Image (cartoon, rainbow, N blue to C red):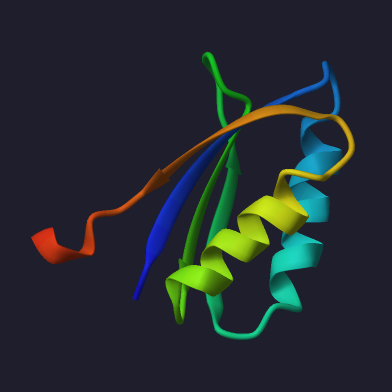
Length: 86
């Protein structure tokens, strides 16, 4: 199951609005498991998404999460599946 971690920077004061929007978007997508957390530090929000297939995962990230208003930037890290889970 492909997994991605997405680090987001948001407009000042819009963190909760974006977290809510991400949860709305991801909760209606079939075949996804996700976690969304606001964080302190260089990034404002961290999202972990597991999908049934890599194409679906990439599509959700590119076409839905990255296009949310008030998201300034994202950094996506795809987990290397071949290394297995520890």
